[in-house]
Amino acid sequence: KFEKIFQWPTTNLYSYLPNLECLLAADPPDSIEMQLEKLKDKDWRVWTTARERLVASGFTAVPALLTAMTQSKGEIKERVEGCLSRIARNARHNKKYGTLDMASIMKFLSHEDSDVRDITAEIIVSSSNDGYKHLLKLTKDKKAGASCIKAIGIIKEASACPQLLALLSDSDADENARIESAKVLGILKYKEAENTLRRVLVQTKNKELKKASLWSLALLGCQSADKDISPLLESDDKDLRFRSAIALAILQSSEVKKLEGWFTKDRHSMELALWALWKTGNTNFAKEAIRKAISLQKDELSRKRLEMIDKTGWNY
Image (tube, rainbow, N blue to C red):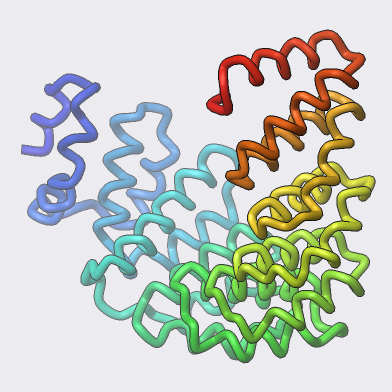
């Protein structure tokens, strides 16, 4: 049955993949070690078959896959990580993979490679309903902390929020762990985090932590934070300026009017302003800003684009 799949047109192959695990389960596979060797093969038919067998093996294959990931690079590493990612995703969607041997994989949470740490944490948190509890104990760990928090965010475990808020408040904690805490608190819409996020946004010098904090404030709908976010529109970091503009737009803040000046700076600033104004949903204000910018724009190409947007409407 399995061999017949490869006689079908390649374009239709993926439509049969949902049934592939059933076919593989009925056909006794080679050892996991042999499948890992086949995963390195250049022939796509060989390595994709090995991939499906490894995914079908579930938690049994996880220790060997993690070991292989630490020893691989480039495309092979991506294939191994893809297997682990699918196992984690299937487990979260109630795929019965049995019990994960936790003791055999905890060491990978301290690995030098952050990709290895991230996928290990995701596997653990997906393995059972209380898998996240194993990770909560490690949120302050310098190496494992950020990966554990990121995994907790994947399953949206709200009960972890108080601990993550305490971690975010600790200025001596690992910066990466604080960044992930700020992100997860926003994703989980934890309103009690607003004041802490505002304080962190103002006080921290870490730009990545600023980005995470202001974005979470936008997700929380904290309109009172607009005065804290507005000064970041003048940041020398383009990404920070962009995120600040979008955050103000999402919050429907009057501070977004400062974006009018962006139309005459440079083309990149103009693009950011257009995107942010579109996010406000306030088309009247956006049209007024664009018409004003047309009269002030010195760059001919930018002026023509603004004129086109003004004529054709806001569906650019």
